[in-house]
Image (cartoon, rainbow, N blue to C red; front, side, top):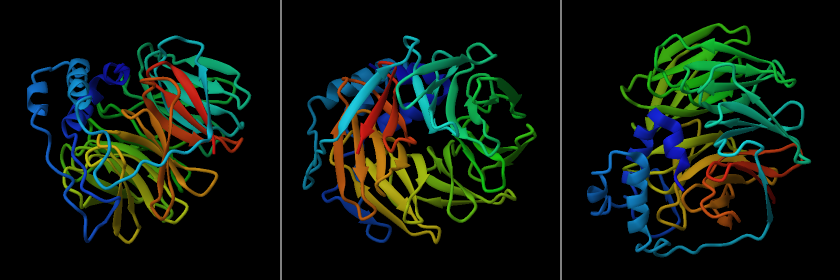
Length: 375
């Protein structure tokens, strides 16, 4: 039911904070930077759940109370789409799929956080799994590199991994001990850039394996996910500081606080409109930030969806996962939202990516499945 919390180990700190910040949404579906509404305060019963130090028990307590809460925001409507979702079980049980990306070989590549492996699935549904050399490595995010290989983070073993499309894996140690590398993306400079939530750094690794680290100015910001921006810089979410960070390829870092109080930005991607789009678990919103620094936020229909991954779809819209709600959502660049329920209950959809076949592919962490959605 709550596999993702046990799988992340140290990331559970950020997630525990996230679930405790469950908020009641303000009426309406959109808020701009200038007129952002306060999304509300934490429910009183969250304090009683804080006695559970174990993240799994904590979330069970929260879920128990949530069942008695309204499921939709006042003044919003939940539009349901009717595209087709298919689900494929990973060969390894309890693999804990998490990261997802489209590879240079037209297949989808994903991380298996619990099984410490990297998976590959063709658009026809054929799987291959490759265990990492380091046992218990805890792979997090994965991205296609400029060298024709896939690059991924190993959160538990403090490595950056590289896997060729034939399955050969090389690991590179992160200089900062216990950095817990997580997000990763290819930069405009031909290198891979990654986040270090516990190290509070942004890292850069060349395709030859040379690593440089840059400190995030705000202490304990917990940089989590990262993406290449339309301006040639890298943009990243700061889970615990409630900010969006930007780092140039020369290592200059700036941070911009999200206007919505209690923001907990998680996933981030470059949108088709030239803006950065991010998921906000604290305010239950999908937000955008232009390269000029203008924020806009769109409230999701439900009060506790925990939006996680986000990507640009083949239809020019943004697609996101709502982990607690068990939905796949679609939001147009003008802010129109619709959602599709995942067939398997408690699937915990996380990362999402567009495949070479024009479908959306997403990781289902709970049942260890890979989902596909035809827009």
